[in-house]
Structures are given as structure tokens and as C-alpha cells.
Image (cartoon, rainbow, N blue to C red):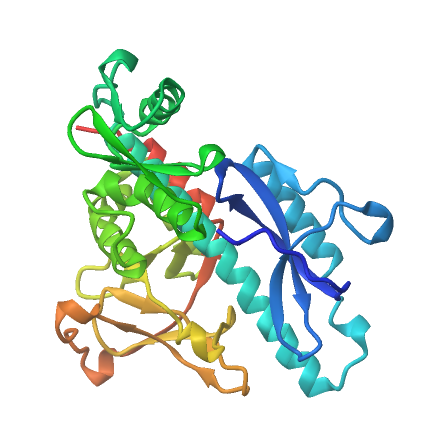
Length: 352
């Protein structure tokens, strides 16, 4: 979630992507990736002045509609860097920054959406409190009613942010909540993360990277169940017929292990480089697997032009990955499928 800021000057627009509004995550704002005078790119709220270069309405009530418009706009902007008439090396650097930013936003949004939907599903049978059972210490009937609305959808959370009233509510008992003043950007962010994290037994105020890593681990058993679905079997069989042995779907990788007993396994997508160093995803190339690690790092290209080979590894807490014999090293191309496909596939699984 990004703050609603606009640059004071009209800057070149190189792409766009929607973001949930921190005050109401049922509302989506369109953000533009703009080129700053120093050669860096940054996200700014898209203007709604069509006559001066805008692209229409900037708010949406539907995620899919916002994403559809973003993708359509990005097609129109695919030659925007060339239109700047910059020296080749500078243009290439900017193009990589744009690719990195757009890819990161799309993958992040897709992953967190899947996690949120799964968190909600895990608590679909939880009892919902009655309005009259709720107690809001130092609060009003209005806050009690607003809290009740939130708990009908997310009964498992222990932190709620009511942006309209500038307060956050924290659970102190089964039905008792306390009002705490809050106007900072982080409180809204924590409240959004709470809806995801608490669904898996964690807190929205914990380290977000570590929380999401733990959620990926929690989702992995369900992802493995996908291998038994008829629809997934057909998808994977078609991939094999096309010579494709690695499919990237959201945060997971369907990986064909061509061993003594050939079979498909599910691995996780790892981070390609450090985002703070300016590394960007390189969606062309291969993955060279020298071990049986459960994390797949896709190949990427740095801003200095250095290309890093895709590879497999274990997560930090897993210990060293079991190595392959040198004769068994595999170098495979990969295909990235629509991230929403993973959510659709998860929807096919029934709970025990």
C-alpha cells in the first residue's frame, strides 16, 4: 500500500499498476510509474485529468477491473522509453527499472491476494460475534457498530483500523476491545497485514517478510495437493508435450523431476537478488539446478547489465540442499503462467 502522493511536476509516465487504499482496502487507486529528473523511477498517484494526459478514473471498487485497465494502459506505454530519445545505455537502464517495478507489483499483489483469500477461507466457520456482545472500552456505539462490520468478515483479527475515525481498536478479550488513537500510515498497513497474518496464527505487526515466508510454508502442503487434481494433471501433461518442465504459477513452481521415477514436485519461487540493489527479474533464460533445493530463484539481470543464472537452493532455515551429481545437473527453461491461476486452482481444493 502506497501513500496517495502526486509529483508536483508532470513527469513521463512509463507504466501503471493499482494499489489498495490504506484507508479502505475495498478501494483501489491507480498509480503511475514516472521517470524522475535524476533518472530513477517512482510510483505516484495517477491524475484524473484526462485532458492533460490522464487515463480516466483513478479509483476502482473491483480488483480485476483495475488490473485489466492497468495491463491495457501498459500495452499503450510499451514504447514510452523509446519515445524519450535517450542514449541507448540510459534507455536500457530505465527499461530494466520499469520491468522490475511492474513485475514486482504484479507478483506482490497476486501473492498477497492469494494469502488473504486463504486466510479468510481458513476461518469461514468461525463464530461471528453479535453486536450486543461487543464491548469497546472508551468507545462509542458508532465504533462498536463499525467494529462489528469488520468482524463479520474477519472474525479472527486482533487489530482493526477505522480510518474514518482516526482510531485503531485492539482486542483485549473474546468480545472486549480498546480504542487507541492512530493516524499514521503504518497503522493502516498493519491492520491490512493483520487480515492476512492472523489467519495463519501470526500478527500483522510482525516482520512482514518473515511472516510471508512462514505463510508460503503453510500453503505448500495445499499446493502439493494440486498435483492430484485432474485439471492440473492435464495442464502439466500439456506442458510436458511442449517440452516444458518448469511452470511458475504465483509463488509456486511445478517442477518435473526427471529421475529414476519421473514425477512432478512443487517448489517455491525465491527472490532474485536484493531489491535494494536494483536487481530486476529477467524473464528469459534458464534455471541451472545443481541441487534438490525447494526454492527456485529465477534468472535476473542487474542494472549494470550482469545476468545471473537461475538456480535452486534451500531456505535459510532448511540447511544445505542435497546436491545433485555433476552428471545429473539440469538446465531448464521456464514458463510464467497467470498468477491468478494459482488462486483459481486453490479454489478447487475442498477442506477436510
